[in-house]
Image (tube, rainbow, N blue to C red; front, side, top):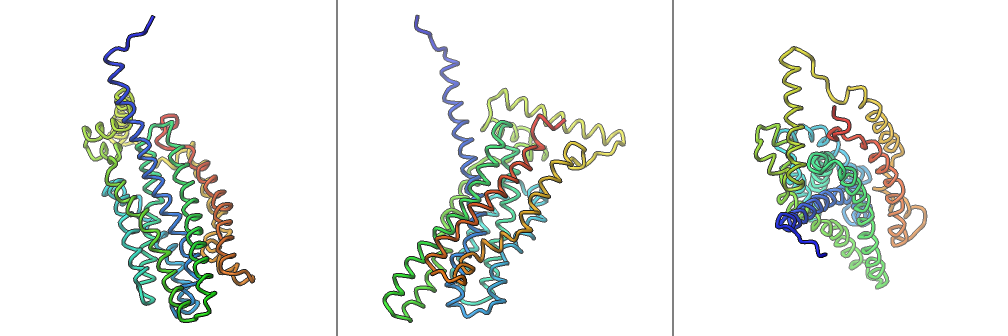
Length: 353
């Protein structure tokens, strides 16, 4: 006997498809954020040999140009959490993308030391903000079973961004080799100057796409709820969840806020969540894994890998081709450690009690 589909069932399928599509869009936007972070870290490696040959900067100045991204990232990371709480997760994602987009013309059009450093510093500020706000946004917007997937996609595309930056460097190294065969020093010098600027220009489209995507997603429902915008928070939940899931999560938020108010009204001290016994060991393990990874100096190796290989006797093209290996191996291990370290998500219903 043929089963009849009720009108309710028929109307549910398109709604479910819309929510699936929106969740995929969230993952895409988050992935673009990870890609930008990776490009921030890796783009200088391919550009550095040509920048060194054409800019007239000394070794100390070039080192500061390279390190400015890390300095900007360190500074912005310190304040990223406060900014995310103040202006919202969505707004900070858009702002970080705008910083990245603004940094590209500052660098690519620069004709001096100061604009280069400022552009790279702004690029680092963007990376630091993205590295904090995108995983936070995913944790608050995705359903519990998809949060690990979201973090994994972000970290995987971060590594892919470093590899993409290396591939761009390979492309321009091939072009430089072709121009070098013409035996025209003036033309070669001019093309090297064009090459390092073009390497930065190539990274602009993903930044524009990230800004557009971040403007199209909903604000974090938890941030909205904390701001007293209950209806807006419920509407944001409904974009990625069924009505039952949205009702359940909204009740959970209300219960959490009521519990905190009850503790405050009775004079009980509200402990910082990271200091609770069940969070301390995972948090410390994540910190130790990341600290050990950074102690290897991998960020410096990624930034200087093309120059290191050039000094070992390889050609520019061969050095660029081999420069993606450190990104694929060591940064991949770092991402595994980060995902493992953040596996206990503080917003997960299993551990929030």
